[in-house]
Image 1 (cartoon, rainbow, N blue to C red):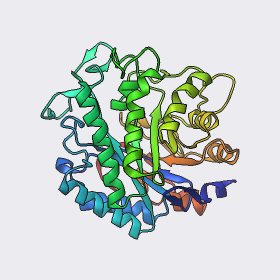
Image 2: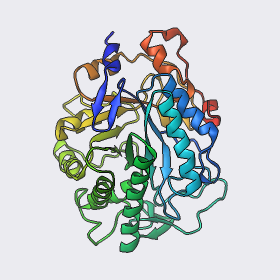
Image 3: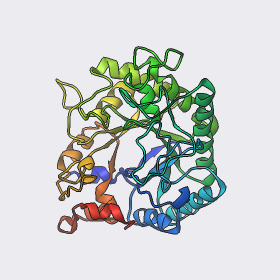
Length: 366
């Protein structure tokens, strides 16, 4: 139909993409002791060689003692881990792709099912993983500023290693999102407050520090979600006016692209309009946006972790919305996790060759 819209180039600062398709960040836990392996490098270079426009890495954690709850999630600090990432980006570039790491601090987490725990307690704005569930400590002011610095250092390292952009993970109930949410941010100092705008100070300071460290011409992406893992219907902002008040200071702090996480990209964000989260973010801020959520598959991504399979699905509605200019880029997760050649099959209209997604795809780096 209008698939050519997906294959138009996109340029913004340090990004010069061959098409509008983004590989969404997907946690893989295949980096023992936080060090990306040759298999990780091959996994990403396969997607670059198969015409993915922009690859966003799995979440990779910053240099804080309890930034991760899983020993096999990659680090974006330390000599050996950064050497691993250097090989990843070299392989992606050699295959003709572009890539940014998603830098991450998980905040207060549940303990890992393996029994592994970090060397110090989890940290967050108020020690809460969700309302009334404490599994960590409240960050001191020094902790907060040290964490801001760690985000900045990771972003600086990303640029030094040759990555093309950086994404900050501010969604899905992790640290930055824990500051946004009144249910997990009970602070009474400058990093708390009654409104989401007040509680955005931590995110704003992270963005400003990252911008300071990478310069004006390096692309910064911020991933956000309205929903919480504990409540898929939750919304941080309930009206376009509240969303504008939340997003505008983030944009002014230095965000170039908002990556707007939804479980289903076709869901409208507010009553009275069919615009989704990415559509509203672009309309309210004027910034470029990435839409994401069950693109090309029948089931939503959280169900996949419960073992539910999904079948290929038409992307016609995605193309219609992109053709209207609602958003700029489309992030594809499970379809690309299960099939490195998904982009080429879409481009060449080889729809009969599209693969579904099963839980087995989570168990290997295909």
